[in-house]
Image (cartoon, rainbow, N blue to C red; front, side):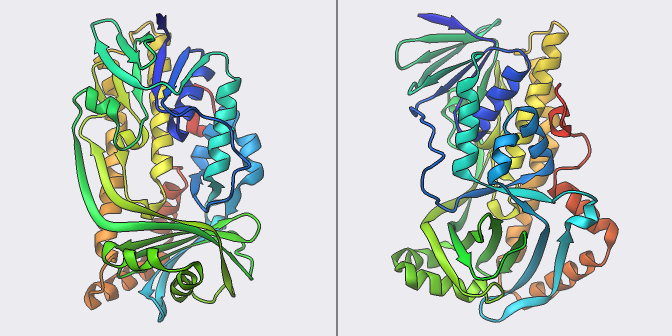
Length: 408
């Protein structure tokens, strides 16, 4: 059995569902394929996993009809404090302090829990008739000719389109089937994700504390809870995994400090090996990659999801405008516009996070002094500081139309 759609999106995670909604919002029929048989579970247990959304990502989610419900569970970020130091000795006297007043009106960004973002996006997808859901189906084959791409599913269904979008994560089988190779770097670090409650209100403050073994991010969530992303060198991870919750909390408290009073663990701990995985090409014949399938970066800047959302907005704009002009939006000439647009952004973020991780994840006394002086200097130069805030909040130049809060 064969079915034809304007677009095929492979991968039903956050980026894949957002991509499907962006296309559907502009009149395209979409086949969304994922081997997981999804169900909506917004009442599932809290697990501490969360994302920082830039203001431009929020604007796009508003256009897609998602933010109105999601904002009820979102925590505004009003301040960001970045410091350097050693566990148990406190932070360096030199630090960077970003305040939302420096940006004008509105928060710097928002924190949202993984479970709410996924479930609200999925609900919206399920409500769209123009999005056909092939959940529980795996892409087995990809065959390309001059006019279309044909995708074979495990249930013997064949779907046809002018364009296949790969949104199936850092181990993208869609990219592999198309012959796209990847550059990878093992950081020899593990990301430990959990959540804690604390006695004192966080007041919408986010903290990034750089330590010799890796950064500790303390990110505000609703109801007096903070999400923790603790990056640790692999050599010390087995010990942390073996600890009881009480013992783990003691280790965390040494690094967390006492500025919010006593802390308590909320939910489970998650351990993720950290690596860089960058696709050498964003496009191939009738194929475009987005999200982690295109570029999975270090989480220390908290910008991985926003990077993927910019992919979504950019590809939606390129395809929609090409279609309106009567162009074949799956042709290489059109897809190269997307690739060229996205290359500078993704390579800049990769280079920045890679460099920051190298410079800050060590205990060299000279580098530690230079780091402190550098942060102190930036904190006192308003022009540079405001520029960094604009980039972090997604208000840089050359934004896709969706990220300005308008339909294409």
